[in-house]
Image (cartoon, rainbow over all chains, first blue to last red; front, side):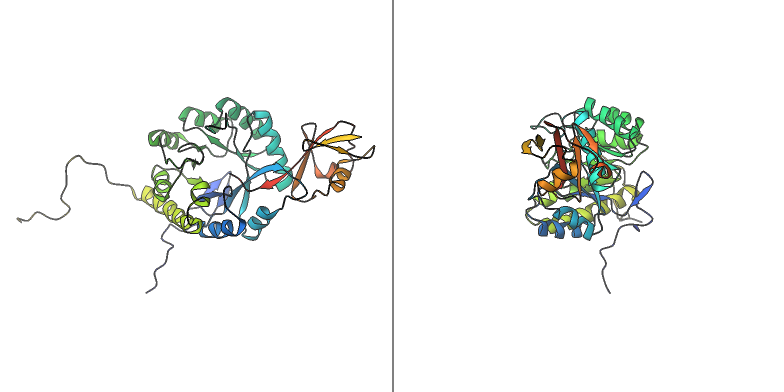
Length: 264
Length: 66
C-alpha cells in the first residue's frame, strides 16, 4: 500500500480565487531572507506554492535577474510588492513600475509606517489602494488586523485583504485571533494571513480561523532547514483548511466520555 | 549634460533618450521599468523620450523580497 501526502481537498475544486483567477495553492510564499537561490528553489518546490512575492529595487549593472528566472522556471506566478514604501505616492509609483517591468496587474500593496514596527500606515494604505484599484490593478493589501480597515479596503475594491498575525519577521504567530475571525466573518473577498507566522501550527491556526490562504517568507527562508519547513507549511495549510471545512467540536468545560458507559 | 540615474550623477550626450541612458550604463532592458521625474515611461516610449539636463531617472527591477 502506498501512502500519499496529498491528503488535502482536490486542488482544482478547492483553488484560491483572486479576482476571478484560480491559484492552485493556498500557501503564498515570499522570497526575502533566503541565503541563496538554490536554497530558495528547494523551499519553493517543497512549499507547493503557485504565487510568490518579489520586491522592486533600483537596478545596477551587477543586479541579476535570478529570482525572476527562478520563478519563471518553476512556473510560479510573480507577485510584486511595494515593500519599503512609506507614502501612498511612493507605493503607487512602485506598483506602476512593477506592472511595467513584470507585466502583471497583481500587486501586494505595502505601505509601512516605520522601520521598527513595519506596521501598515492605514491612512496611506487606503489612499494607495483606492488609487491603484482605479488604475486597474488587482490590489492585495497588507493590512493591520483591524476589521474596520479591512472592510474599508474591500469597499474601495481590493481583491483580497491580507491582515497581519504579528509584525513582519517576528514569528509571534497570530496575536489577535478574534480580530482575524471577525475579518473573516465579514469579508466578501479572500482573507490572506500575511506576516507573523513562525511555525507550522500557526499557519494551520490561520486556516482554522477561516483564512483563505497564508503568506509567509521569513518562517521558511530563515528556518534551520528551509526546505523541510516549507513542506511543513504546505501540510499545515492543507490541514488547517481541512479542519475548518470539517467543523471542529465545541469546547466543553467538563469531560465527556468517548467510550460507552460500563454498565449497560 | 548631467542626468541623475538611481541617485547618481551621470554624464550623457545632449539629447540622449531613456534607451541611450540604459545602454550607456550597461543596464539590462528586460525585466526593468523606468520612471523620469516620478512618472513611469513605458518601454515603447524609451526611444522617443529625451532626457534633459538634471533629469531624475529611476530604473527598477525585481529582487528577492516580501
